[in-house]
Length: 404
Image 1 (tube, rainbow, N blue to C red):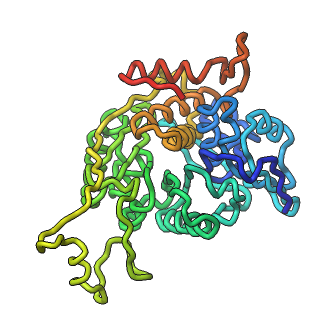
Image 2: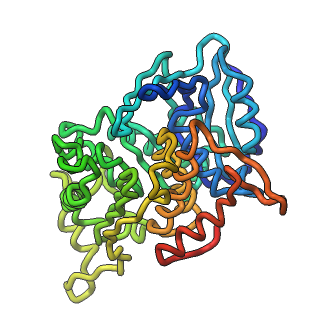
């Protein structure tokens, strides 16, 4: 395998996706014809979302990994190079590029299957620059999410034990959003900063046979989404966890329970090896444990711990006109790329969701990727629009505005 990258090991990286690169073929309902050789996959679309919010000179702070096989189209190589991101291109002529088949029904629900062997990414694929990204986007099962977080943190610690912990944004893989995986999902929540299924995936975890849809209208059932989030977060009462549920034309629902903040960590205590986080074990010295919490007078004394107040908020989609949505493929991935890079640059979860909503709007306006260009003032545009202006308009309508 040959690696081709031009980034410096010291390049500052705000965003890195562990999502795969896939060349898509997309099939619609007749009479709309199918399209082939489309740049796609969770990795590509999340990188797009982050790149949209990273105009020059920030383009190199966005990173992703492409595994190119013998059939890799030169047209896609040219398209990727115009983005000027910190892309790691790994070429292996002995295999085919990962390809996928996408099909949509009348409700814009997507069916997907791989048509060539897939090649998943893990922490061993990361170069030193990518390894120390400020944020990571993952598309995987709950158990693989835990493994990826642990693997990334372990490799970072081996190089720099004092490195600040990165942000982790987890997008559950649809096939394993089932009631039997719910326990694994709650086990994964302490490892990530944001968990973001779409409404159907959330309903799948909760065993909702209607998949979060209103039986009369076929639209997203907002009450069901809110109830599922309340149930899921109610099972995690001791710390603050954030869910951002992607709901298509309804926008997104941001749910964050109040509790102890996990970022930054105020007190780090050692715990016995091979035991789960936060659990009490038979071999713990309880007297010593409580002694550390008491003052000289024998009363309990604790250091102040930051507390998150909690959030429950719907944020509308940018496009409220269905005619503007040409192809929803990749919209959710682009949303999470925009959200992740916003968090990495210090934005709060609500503002980060706004960044994600604007990123998604560009991803769904056409088949494939939006067109990168410049205007008469030599400012970067996508589909002829300045991203900053679209973000400004969206945030003004929703009561907030700050520049990226």
